[in-house]
Length: 247
Image (cartoon, rainbow, N blue to C red; front, side, top):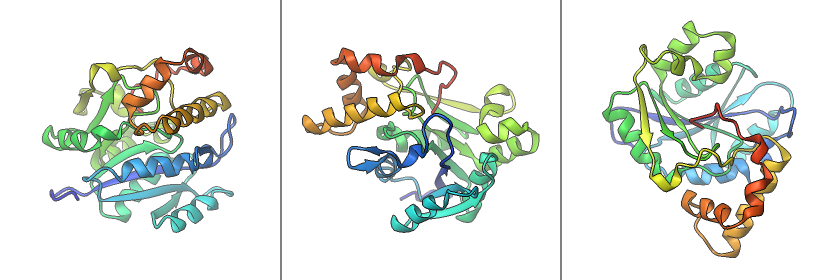
């Protein structure tokens, strides 16, 4: 439990719509959905006070409301494309001033550094904090509500959808705190987010290997599984997003 004067919320923006793979957060990896897997990892974090689903109000997304109720999670609804407004609404809903942001289509997160990263964010009085050079899809961002509101005031329509691009484009306006992760985990060439069917195949194969060998779901073990299987390395290599550095 976070005992500081700050209140920290994990806000997860949820929507079904995707041109490449429909309903990504609710796809199964092992016996759990991607969203369930992520929430399990978030519950390892002692400093997050609340988890709130920031659900698109577009038709069809009612399934996330059902998910929230089933899993005893708080939720809000908002504009499909204005993700920043949904995250702000989620923070206001529980009176939080710091937003721990993850994206709903990522089954594996670097949960081992959630708490220490939040501590670093607060100690450094940062506007935004993120871990650098992790495998794509395993990272996270920690954003002050005031900084998010500045994005909403001054950013473009596209910035409102992508949330933090405005901050990274304006490093003189914002204090950006970069977390250096252990060297063996600096593997940005590995893709572990879900955007295409091939991504889903890969993470399912990784989960099978972890379960078969009774390994903890940790980023270190995930990387070991990939490094010892040349076929896994090839599955989604063509989809690496060189511009996505933080989530």
